[in-house]
Structures are given as structure tokens and as C-alpha cells.
Image (cartoon, rainbow, N blue to C red):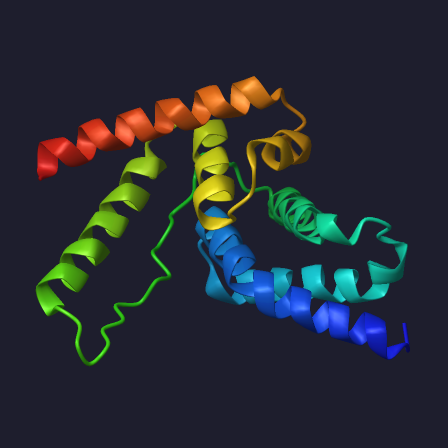
Length: 172
């Protein structure tokens, strides 16, 4: 892939999706070093296969599908059970000059609570939530990645959001 158009396409895709994919992978495996390796592999594969992707509007789908496959490859090679995640929040507390410290701190607490609550949920619900909320994927893209019906994606996501709302309401 020596042509400059492909390099530009790759750079745009990398800049657009790196943070979303990083958050998704890190929350799935909870290991920053392994996550960075997986992200590097995903984008290396994108670079190597960009010419083979016919529909350029599906690059996001391709990236997340590849990331999910890499995560599962990691699980298989390490014989990690999918219910043994120990997720940590990757979003650092960011406050701009005019920011309100109390609001920012409360939002960080809510994010931590959500991630903690996701730990106790079935893996299928957790993964759908992460793909939707951290990956920004559509229902259709998630159903294709997970090879399940789109209505099942909607149902699982609805159940996760309901559980999270109930649990957060108890705390706040």
C-alpha cells in the first residue's frame, strides 16, 4: 500500500477510531500493555488490508470486528475465561480551566460505578454496552460483529441500561 490516498485514508481512520477502540479493548481485557499491543495489531491489519476494503464507509465496522477477534485470540492464547474481567476505568479526570471540579469528580464516580456494575452483568450484555457506548457502533454493526439478531442487541442493551439506571439510582 504505497499510494498516498491509502495513507491518508489510514491516517484519518486511525485518528477517528483509535480512542474508541482503545477504550473498548481495555475495558474488555483490563491490561494496558496488552491493549496497546492489540490496538497496534488492529491498525497494522487495517493498514495492510485497506485496499481490500471495498466499502470505505464500513471501516469502523471492520476495525471493531478485527479488535473483537484480537481480544478473543488473546483470551484463547491465555486461556482467560470471559467472566473473570477486572476492568479499570481508562478515562482520566480531565478538567479545563473553566471546569467545575465537583461536577467532573461526580462524573468520574458515575463512570467508575457503571464499570463496576458492568462487572456483575452477563458477558453478552457487557460487551454490547461497551460496543455501543464506547465504540459508538450502531445496532446493525453490533449484530454483525457478534453474529446475533439486531433485536437481540436492542433487547440486551435495554436490559443493561435498565439495570445500570436502577443501581445508580440506589447510590445517588
